[in-house]
Image (cartoon, one colour):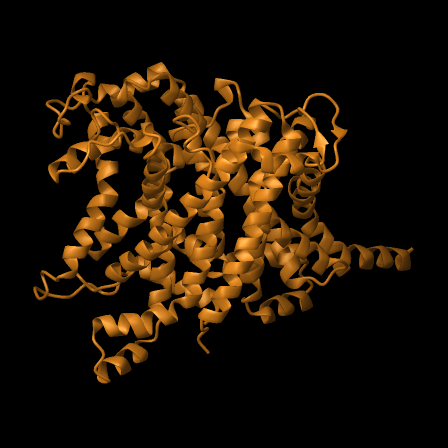
Length: 294
Length: 300
């Protein structure tokens, strides 16, 4: 089975899960006995986070744990926003994430198309070198990458987070593989009509590549939004922090204010959760892509 | 003039020029931030440098010092224990969960979402949640375990239990990834094979054991390799949950090299650790692939 087919199956698996039984039959299956405990274990930590975020400080310092708060303390959320520059961290993260998503879509499309369709001198060597960087864990290269970014005077700026992540070897590889599955006849016809390569890419190839581009965008969004180690190394000033790094410093400063910490945590994951619920298909596709190409 | 213009035009629109014009932004960025660091990191591992003053060459001294460094040894041992626990739990757990989630039962959509959601939760958010759930005094975990007569446990604050707590937390965060990959693979198993086995009188367990598992071989091999690579690169969760503690109970290689390079100013030695870790990952991956090749049968 081809990679693309498998990924399609994965996406479909998430979308329309194996046809739920129709009508009133099979209301209860013994599989529920397996599924309920699994789901409970997965969900309890998240539910507990939300419940705690609405408690008073006294309720969090109570044993046995307060399962149902007496009143919902929504002011925990406004308190968090007042005590730490969360809005600023959101804006920073959004800027960095958008820049990286746009950069990856543009540069990976251009390079992926060149590697898929254009025969040019040194193409194979360049492609193999790009793939080689996929094999090396980021931790191995983190020290020199820091030195390079420092030599560009980007340390403690958002540029440090954007520039090295504007393009990824994974995205180039994924789009190249996808472009190669498209019928080449359309492009050849357009070339005979005198269309330029750039025109073909933007008017024919990319409009046919919606799902692949969406997958790349969603995966890049998730990686950038959730990245921690690189911001930790390159950003020092609170004003330049991303939400993850800010959350970590907030945790350091408010270790005993569990309710505020949980409120901050809920807010930090809202954008990714929203994206997950609206673009679940592309998350699944992206994960199946990383998972099944091996 | 016309001829020259046409020549210029042909060069500009030639595949070599257009190809490089398309590829060069990406290639340039990957050279600067991908390839140069790989080589530079190798050079650093033969140097003594604090990242501020100019480095000087020390030959193999960094690598020679590694076997005599008790902290490095501890980090490698912790990493091995972590990997040996994390990989089977997340891969086998992922398989069983995926099989259950592949059944046509009511509310399957809700079950799936419940299992998938932790995948998109960031590591820091996961750590903040688990520091609270595993809180020794007020945590939900001790209360629930107490109901069945277990505990109380100190979790992250116990030098015996901290590493296992990190295993539990990371399995929670990662298992959804494996489930998604397995689910996709399960959808790819031809119905005819399962039906043929049913006609031959195979039960649910027999089908699972003799049809499903062999057909999932390639995916399992991939997940074992991928989870092992990620397990050996563990950093975020340890840095945030225990920072290597209590004492040095949860020191792992990447945490150690981070502390050496960015807190201790011993970057050359840290680069040597990074390269040794890379070598370990590479060798383990090759060994797993070789063993896998003999055990896994790829479908025709």
